[in-house]
Length: 152
Image (tube, rainbow, N blue to C red; front, side):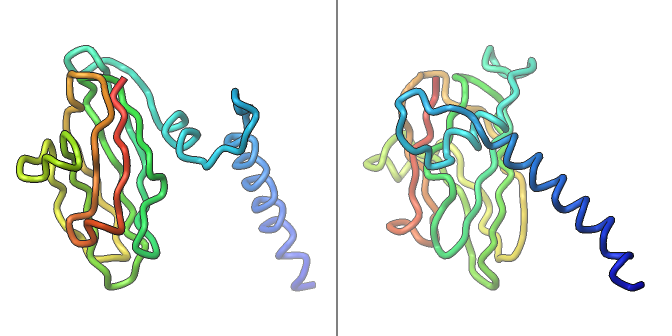
């Protein structure tokens, strides 16, 4: 009898898993494997007004095992950006800071508050107006946790 109570939960889990796989699916234009970075950015981006012409964009970024996932984020030029930042490393500090380049670390475009995991926060800033590839890192782990912030 007690197993019958678990059936609805198992069905909900299977349905949620199927929906997740369907949402993450898609084709890769180059025929190679997709590391998931582009899919995460594409699924979370919603240009809907705001910003100086770039709309608004919500991106997800996870810090776990002293690394970022994904290591590439994309936003429209001038967009109001919200990064939902999940620090999944228990009792470890992480953040997100954005710079013009890896050589311009003295003047951050955006510097997020350092949070101790396991914790989630939102970082809100305006993407640069100039398209190009920018540099992001964790200020606590600056050589281990880095990525590219692409402005289109």
